[in-house]
Length: 159
Image (cartoon, rainbow, N blue to C red; front, side):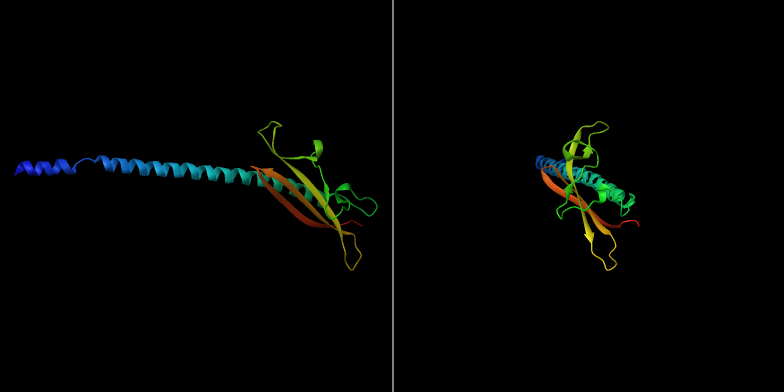
């Protein structure tokens, strides 16, 4: 009778080969899913970093347009009226009107470049004041996909 009790104990103790294989497959599936998820999260984070840089460039130019001194006799170039489609605007004095959106580290290697467009139109108003609508739009390509970010503001010419 004691012999049959020992046999039962040895049968239930330890893992069967099928249990170990199922466990290994489950761990493998979880590992593959985790690596894919982390890769997706990293791509989203890098895309958001580029978008943040684009926002900063556009915001900087809007701030410049709003803070520059402009009188009816001296209109700075940033507030000059353009066509409805706008003109390419180079705010960093780089070559070929290309704006550096992302640079690699502290070096000057450009990872992402874009085209900044400035659109300035006159706004009709009952007081016949010189009011201008200013739009800056930055278009760039990142990871093979085209993106665009723009901001619009209004500015009255100083009297």
